[in-house]
Length: 449
Image (cartoon, rainbow, N blue to C red; front, side, top):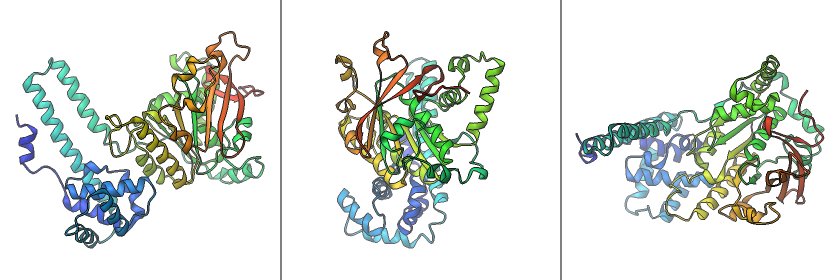
């Protein structure tokens, strides 16, 4: 059984021509960088020099820096990848051998396929070595092998954003303009009237943090906002879930939209009137353009690249911050996690400005509030990094008194504590929490017909 050392003595799958064409295309026309970073990661390049150049461009794109041969050479110097005798000449060569950037996706797919084949070689060697050494039972080795192969397939997903419904119908093309003319605030509506008045809606280029302890309803309020923005503005909305599956999210959306108890949807014990309700709700959701990704390892750079391809983008939601990793490095390493979270929050704010859309990111709060008499969260409870507070335009923290006090007079009432608000004064807005429907509404609104 050949090991990886033996395999590397052979010619591993590669295409240096495709690698050079990808780099040359990005240097010729920086507009194609967004397409490439959604397909390739730095480690996908076989030649070390190509990998260093791509990693430099990858980082520059993450921070919305201008990309051309001059700026890239400057960054290569900063990163220690620059050699006076060879680097400038090689960069010129990359541009000269690339006739056009029009085929960059084709070149990138070649590079990705070769990288996948090399990864398969490594994984095959590892699986073979485990079997030869009999490291555990046959069943355990098989399970380990399946996990390794599944990991390769997972990292090679072609479509990480999946459409929930069809593109908006042309009949409602002017709905956004009509609704804006009567609105009391400039941003997109969350669907919660008092909250909209407090934060002036969801404004373009804003980073909005929704933070809470587990069980308070972060994902629920995010999905409510997602559905409302999709319906009210008729724009494309994207939801990146690093925790829940697409099917779980769809079930919650359906429960909220139909006002059918989620327990019934989970067990399938539906009455005839329930089927009618979910049919109407499905039809309503089908009129929206909601896209969902449940890739648990996606980075901000990859989100940015995917969203750049969406027309008429209106909102991005990320669930949730502490599960995210850096684009170029495994953040679960020994590196200070606070610094990693700070870098991710900054990248999210840059993405919001770059795409000119509101970005909502959910965040966990630390356990500090649990030890206080008044368990209402504070800004200092934001977990792992004060940079989250710094980068955010609004910070909204959720608190339900009945979660801690079963005899609370405010049963199923949630406080939306606007602790930071660049568009107005901080304050608290109370909304109705309906756990059976996974839904929030205004306090004076009856959820039903």
